[in-house]
Image 1 (cartoon, rainbow, N blue to C red):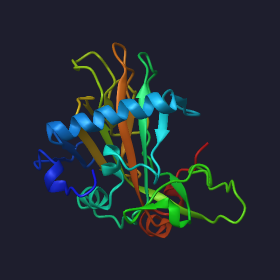
Image 2: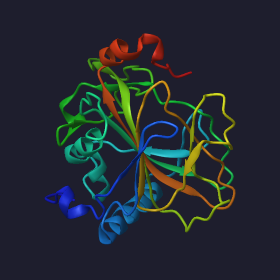
Image 3: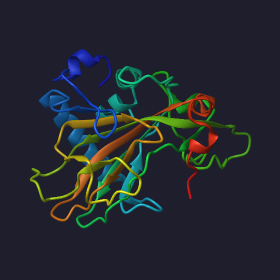
Length: 253
């Protein structure tokens, strides 16, 4: 959506900040209706064109968005969107963003409470940057462990700072359908007994800072598929170590 600002795109600027069980932001009717329809159409086309890639270790399919994305979905990769989300939280977000399309088939199993305090590696190359935002290059560096896949490429380690889930392309939702995102007080809480949950209602958003206490997880969708766009803003690793200690960074298994 080149040439358009967030003022042109956003429908609702009344975003709610909630503190139970940890601080998080909820927004409904995020984008204007015509903008949302463009996002939804491109979401469908992108999944259809690339096929559904099963993500290792997760009961879902996904597609990573990279710097060659120039259509409607590029709004989620923009510096203006990055700064909008970062402004809700007191973190030193460093313009490194990982963003992907997530599709859960009907009956995708429960996730488990986790906090997303994971590392993320990016390739230090000019073509990894879009609108001042550095994006993953899965062909050059593995995001989850920093493994370099092409000689001469340098991997840059960061840590997740903010997580955001935008719900899109879903059928009308009712209580009992599942597919919500549960928010938990403890990593030991049962998946189906969250302190609160956020339903997958189209054109709505959940965002929160990644801290040792931001426990959340997917709840089984027993009636219909669940679709979303999931993204993480990142921060320097040293910031996390100073604040929480190096032990707080959860390495991928």
